[in-house]
Amino acid sequence: MFELVRRSARTTLPVLVQGPTGSGKELVARALHESSLRSSRPFVAVNCGAISPQLIESELFGHKKGAFTGADDDRAGLFEAAKGGTLFLDEVGELPLELQPRLLRALETGSVRRVGDVAERPVDARVVAATHRDLSRMVAEGRFREDLLHRLWVLSVTVPPLSARRSDVILLAERFISEAGGSPKRLSPSARTALLHHDFPGNVRELKNRILRAQHLAEGLMIEADDLGLSGSNPLPRAPCRRDVSGLRETRTRSASVIDVKELSMELLDQLPVEEERRALLRMIDAFGGNRARVARVLGIGKSTLHARLKRLGVPMKFESRNNATIVAA
Image 1 (cartoon, rainbow, N blue to C red):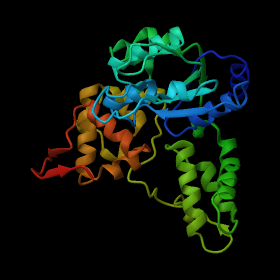
Image 2 (cartoon, rainbow, N blue to C red; image 1 turned 30 degrees about the vertical axis):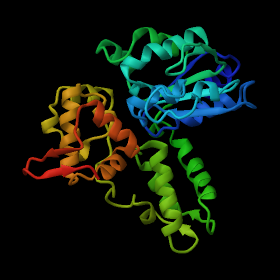
Image 3 (cartoon, helix red, strand yellow; image 1 turned 90 degrees about the vertical axis):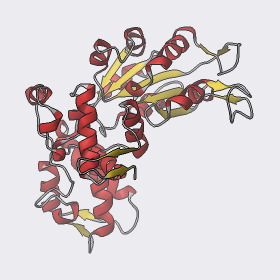
Image 4 (cartoon, rainbow, N blue to C red; image 1 turned 180 degrees about the vertical axis):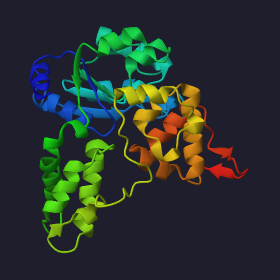
């Protein structure tokens, strides 16, 4: 992976960074930028799943004064803000289908047109996109444009899950301890053993969260396995996902109605058809009493990303649970 990053940094071609949620795709994008000749110019990042479909066009391409309600001034978009540098499109698979032709045109022509404007503006931004989704499958389902996929997928870097990089676990843990602040602490032998034997379904993001919590809650100067929540039962509301490729194929044949809420993860949801995914998320929200913030934490994503996903699936802010109670977004 590092060799691919090094070679890709020499060029200005688009790069697609792929890997599971929480594996460190943005770190790879930043490494690409910092290793390139554009390192002295801006690195601009945007999460395509965290911005409403109504605003993301203006966010990327800018807008003209009076283009819509609230557009009180001319505003440059992120393509222009990244002039001479890198534009990182995180979760590009969440980009609305109707906006994808505009992104394709910007990549092909090197120019953008602000919302409400008639003039094309040249832009000079190297695009690095990232996704945990199977974009080829989305193309087959009509949810992602094939021509845009080919334009983004000129160069590709795949970030493996943390479970496939166990030699990185202790190095990363010690780095996170040094960044956590407070009195410096060390990992006990039992903590190291627990970390090395944990599957980390939430990848690097989960490891960092566990280390930060342990750094501030552990008594004394040593972090024990108990402080990490790894000595016995897993404190997360769901069990670790230990499926191999064949296991993932098996889950595709299972109905969302028979999948235990505790088993749900972003990886599993991405294997389900759209309607099954919708039902699974509704059951999960119901199980947590409508607390969407908790659902987002369990899935390892931001609350705004979850809201954008639910909106795409047509899930209202309020709905009737199986107990006939009204569930309200929390």
